[in-house]
Length: 224
Image 1: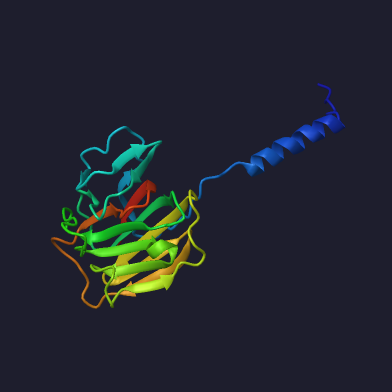
Image 2: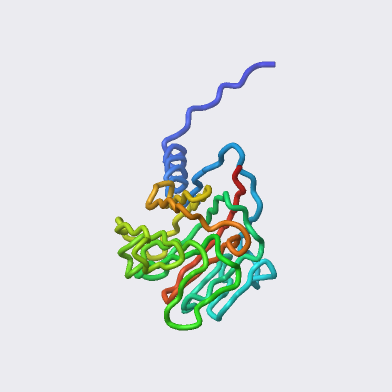
């Protein structure tokens, strides 16, 4: 059978291909920061792609909605959304998060009791508190129960969180060692000499004060 010689592309064809390549390059590709490691096993996932929060979660106040495939929190005033499933002491939690305003203030809790919430203006958590862009987008914090305590780890938010920019957050906890990463970059770490473990210290929560924040693509791993 005779072979066929493919014609060289015309200038118009090359222009079309260049345009397609440019448009493809400009498309937003979701961030994926692979932190897979030996001994990591997925034990819970949630993409929030539904209409109601569901039985996996305990809401302790109003201001919790699912909107456009994400968890939306606003004006919670430290009434966390608790994951009912208990977690092991050695764990990695990953999710996407973004703030709706230039106030930042993305907040979650780990190793809490699974039910507590603020009963007054002040609030002392039952576990570890992780904050990005807190205090008007000025501090990243890891705190053991009291986010205002002298024993917290607080580092400047540099650069500040951008409104509506999606970030990928990774929290890793092995015993008393806690690491807080943003888009694959370490932003804070803590070593707790008296780690919060065992019954009453097994739950994760999304939390919020006032400014609107959104969360998506939660994946939790048990670590050996």
